Length: 126
Image: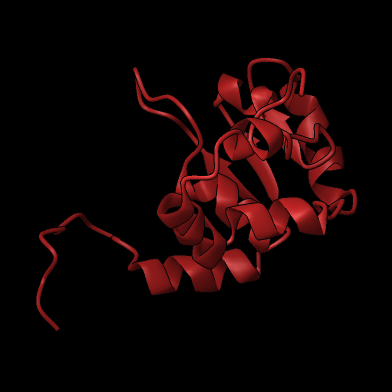
């Protein structure tokens, strides 16, 4: 298999990462300086039903945000982390899962349905 340009020691392929994720209680998401919005880690946590430990303060603006599933490092004490990781994951509504499903996402871009992003993606007035 050709190298993808990553020669870091102990580098995990995405397949190896996903295998570890399946057997984990949670996913760690640390944003880089200046990074905004949700990441692939956010969606992995939702679709694999894993707890998310994140530095992403913007996550509270999304409809799928649930403090029982998402541990915002800036707002919680680290001594709460073990309890957080050992409480059951609360499933996200099917309607939201469908909204973020890749096939539905692509279809929305083709149809350009006005207002759909505001209705499902962000919290706030509808």
